[in-house]
Image 1 (cartoon, rainbow, N blue to C red):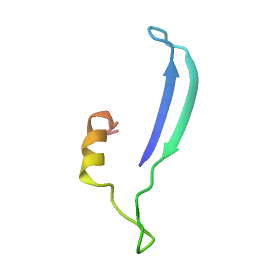
Image 2 (image 1 turned 90 degrees about the horizontal axis):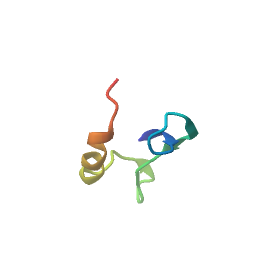
Image 3 (image 1 turned 60 degrees about the vertical axis):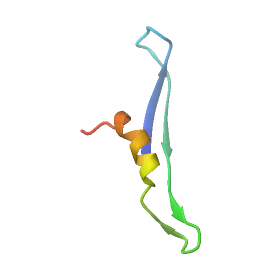
Length: 51
């Protein structure tokens, strides 16, 4: 799950910092990537940029 973000002061447009985080979900036994669990997908759904 790639996440790009920008931090700004409240009420200001100027970016203080930008960042990028990648979340990866793995099957511990198989050591293979898996889809995020529904609880994670549901938590991020309102924040997704569907462009």
